[in-house]
Image 1 (cartoon, helix red, strand yellow):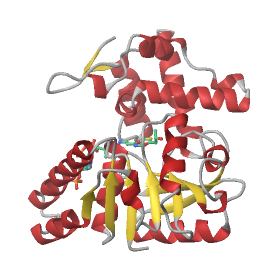
Image 2 (cartoon, protein in one colour; image 1 turned 60 degrees about the vertical axis):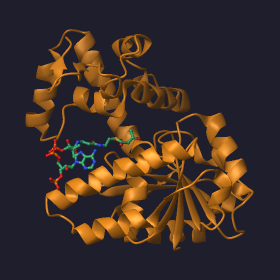
Image 3 (cartoon, helix red, strand yellow; image 1 turned 120 degrees about the vertical axis):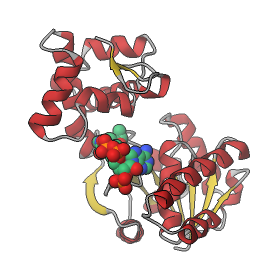
Image 4 (cartoon, protein in one colour; image 1 turned 30 degrees about the vertical axis):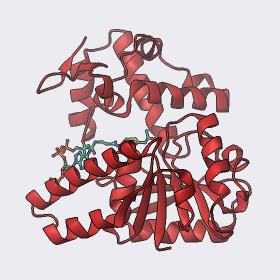
Length: 289
Ligand code: 3HC
């Protein structure tokens, strides 16, 4: 695999493009428009400049990585890629359309992978030209910092596809874990109930936002408290994944916390909109309850 396609130049897609280019792959980066793909590359340039400032990488390494990233106009430009990773918005119809469109231009041995955090891989594979060459490749945010990739095989995914994507993931310097196509895979299956429980605790008046987060940060040695992490991931995303767990298993232990539902109904999605459990508009996040 020399050329990798990344579809979606938002936070996850840009992160994936960055680590792939830093590992020496030529990266074709697409989004809904050329401008959005260019903006994704500009964000990567900033991240790399910060690494140069901290003397983590040389200016030459930054230039080499940036030169490997090519923003493209349309999905048809993905034709030379031997692996395409989709990191578009978490909407199934959109993803299906992307797989149909890009699947039509790829080589007959190319692999298509989705960074979905919760949509079933076996179902998404139905929109690709060959479900044997389709799988889930789940990165974590922030991609350049987080050391893990979850690989998820659909019912029809071939061993060869898994082996090829695993080899690619290792060249990015990430640890690989394998999961079956079950709701939430591994990480979100374990993480979301914790974030949801923190919302229950807050809603039931157990403690304040700050104390719940401080308790988990210092009492569990987590880098961020659960409410900060929920704001960081996006409360809408947390609720979507929690609903997938609840509906996919039918188990009431996964029912979404009413307070989480309310925050999403209010449009308080967290850091990306400036308000969630914290107000993110100032220099430091300030608890809103
Ligand atoms: N992009 C690139 N690098 C970043 C970054 C970003 N967005 N944010 C922070 N970093 C880097 C910093 O540059 C710094 O690098 P250095 O050590 O080389 O100087 C390092 O990360 C530490 O950053 P800070 O000192 O600024 O701050 P923290 O120590 O608080 O670390 C954090 C920030 C790495 C985000 C840490 O708080 C953390 O690990 N939080 C938990 C993140 C997490 O759990 N992510 C998974 C979310 S679940 C998910 O993604 C799945 C999805 O399906 C929902």
